[in-house]
Structure formats: C-alpha cells, structure tokens
Amino acid sequence: MQRYAVNSQAQAGETGEVFEYTLKTPVSIARQRSAMLPILASAIDGRRVSIYNRADGSEHPMRGVEIKNTTGLQLMPGPISVFDGTAYAGDAQIGHVTAGDKRLLAYAVDLDVQALTREEQQTTVRSIKIVQGLIHQTSRQVHRIGYGFTNKDTKRPRQILVEQPRMQGWDLVQPAKPVEETRDLLRFEVSLAPGESGTLDVVHERTDLQTFAVTSYDMGMLLAYAKQGKVSKTVVDAITKAAEMQAAINDTQRRIETLDQERRSIDQDQARIRQNMSSVSRDTDLYRRYTAKLNEQENRLEAIREERQQEESNLLRRQQELEAYLRGLNVE
Image 1 (tube, helix red, strand yellow):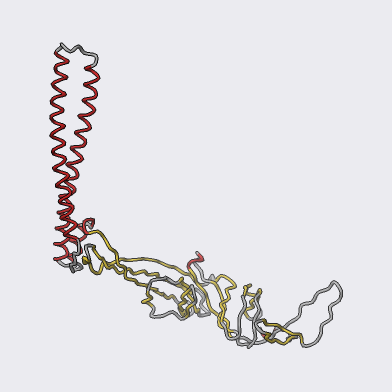
Image 2 (cartoon, rainbow, N blue to C red; image 1 turned 180 degrees about the horizontal axis):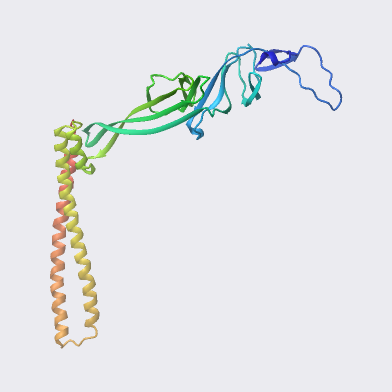
C-alpha cells in the first residue's frame, strides 16, 4: 500500500499528554475552500487474519488485518479503506493506536470460511460430607465450546483468531493458554491450509460448593452417589437417621392437622344443629336427638383437645431431638 501513498506533508510530536502533527511547510487555503493533506506515509507491520466471534451470530468469520503500529508515531482514530493488492477490499474503523500497540481490523465477511460451534456443560458431584449439621456438596462444572472451521479457499491459507468472552470464576484448562488476552476477551488461533478443515475446543472448569439442609436432601440421589463412591456409608447413615426423625415430625404434624380439620367440621355441624333447634319445640323427639348429638360432639371436642395437646408435646420433643442431633454433626 505504501507504493500508492502520497508523500507525507507533516511531522509529528508530543506536547505533554496531547499528540499533534505539524505541517512541514505552510499551506494556503483559499476563502471558502478546503484541502485534504497527507500527514503520515509509512510502512506498518501486519498480517492477514480471519476473526471469528460467535456472539456475532454469523456462520462466517470476518476478514481482517492484525496491525502493529511500528511507525513510532501515534495513529489517530478514524475510517480506513483496505486494499488487497490494488483491489479495494472493504472499510474499517480504527481507534487511537499508540506507538508499538496492536489492533485488529475487520473489514469484510470471509465467505470462504465456514464456522460451526457447539456448546455443552456438565456437572459432576465430587464429594458429599456433613459439616456442622449441613450437607456440603462439592461439584465440578465443565463448560466446553467446540469450534469447527472449513477453509474452502484452495489458494490461500487462513489464520483464524477465535474470540471468546472471559468467564469470570472459571479456570481455562484447554488450550493451556490463549494466544492473546484483553480485559474482556480471550483469543485463540487456528491455522488452516488451503482447502483444509480444523477444530478448536475451549474448555473451562470450576469447582462449586453447595450447602443443603440434611433433612431436605433427596435420598434416591444420595444412594446413587453412594454407589458411585462419592459419599461414604457414615454420611448415608447419618442422613438416613435424620430423614427418619424428620418423617416422624411430619407424621405428627399431619395428625395435628387431621385433628384440626375434624374440630372445624364439628364446629360447622354444631352451628347447623343450633340453628335448627331454634325452630323446633323442646318437647319433640327431634329436639332431643339434636341435644344428644350436641352432647356427643362436645365429648369428641374434649377428646380432640387432649389428643392435640399430646401431639403438640410429641412434636416439640421430636423437633428438639432432631435439632440436638444435627447440632454440630460432622461426618465425612
């Protein structure tokens, strides 16, 4: 491109934190006219790349150029026209580039390269133990993104830069390290010969610790983990005992609710009987039957009150026993 550039008409310099270009010779501009003056004409290091970021939603990467500012001067932001040889290739936009800094310029879609991606995530339980009455479950999560590229160009190779957002809290395990990192992105490189296909797997891992109440853990899942050797028999026995104690508490609560439902039903029936008695003569058999029914219901209400008090006492005792069992329970 240097062969097609006009000669520079300016020199550059730094003034404090401000960068300025100073024209070598004065330029006269007529009234109500304008002029475009070249201020820099210099070779610059760069290489041809294809840039793929699946967040773009395209099945093709972008044609691009990775440039390094080797001019020793500041490059100001603005539009760029890209020529491949003498042919116009596309437009790009560049920000401010300091001396020695690198930038990626994407200027057109690379239709000769086909890209496919797949994403999967797996969670594996590593261990289960009880710490101070809580279940501590350690799990390993594996997040994998697979990239596949096909270079349909039979004349030119491709250097594909794959951009992927950083995953905070995750460790990169494959590849061992990216070719480049930014604040928000990781970049990996895939080299393809003309007409060649290639793949890239980017794998992240992290270890999570989750806590559960002992009495809420799924027993079927726990036994399955035990068969896989991920939880000890002592942990299974401790959780089983806690589950049995919780089941006894649940049974007591159901009995109390059943007694309350029966009491409410009797109260409703007594209200109906008393309403009917108000319109019946006291010396009739019906009135006497109503009276006997009320006496019978009152006896049952008294029995319900006694039974409920006993069940409430049982509930409190069983809850205290469970709390005492769980308090400070540590099993591995």
